Length: 244
Image: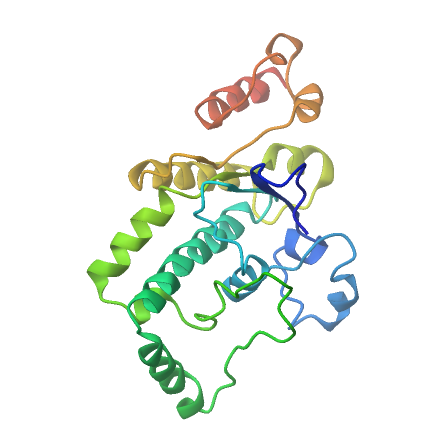
C-alpha cells in the first residue's frame, strides 16, 4: 500500500521490487523462484503487471508521485511505468468517447479468435478503486486509437508523470551485486534513458537517483557533499575509475 502522512498530502508510492525482478526473471517460467514472490517486494515482469500494480491510481495526477527502488532492470521497469501511465490516459479517452466496443473487438481478435488466453485481473478491487488501467490488459492504446490521438495522449502522460527511479548501478556493481548487464552498458543505457526523457519533455520524473550512503562508499571524500544527478554521473564515474 502507498505510504502517506495525511489525507491531502501528495500520494507517494515507495515501491520495492523483489529478488526475481531485481535479476530480471519471470516467475511464470521459473518455478524454482516462485516461492520468493512477495517476500521482499512485488514481482513486475511485464507491462500488465505494472498496469495491475498501479490500477486505480491516476499516474498523471499532480498529487501522485512514484518512487521506485530498482537498479539492475531500472530502464525496463521505468518503461513499464511510463507505458502504464500512457495507457491509463488512453483508457480515460476511450471511456470519455464511448470506444469500449472497439477495445473488446481488438481483444477478441488478438486472443479468443487466435486461441490464446486473454489477460484478466483476478480478484476483487479494493474499495474506492475504480480499476483505472485494467481495461487495456493484454493490449496497448496504440492498438486501439488513431495514431495522432495516441501520440497526443502519450505526450501528455510523459510530461505529467512525477517520481523517481533509483537506477543506482554503481551500488549494484560495488555492493548488492544484483546486476543484469555490465556496468559500462548499464551507464550507457542510463544515458539513453536520459536522452529519451529530454527529447520527449519528461520534466518532473527523475531517471537517476543516488543515495548519500552509497556516495560514502564509492566517492572520494572531496566529492561526498555533492548531490548527484545524471549530468554529473559519467564524469564522476571516470574520476573514480582513474583514482581506483
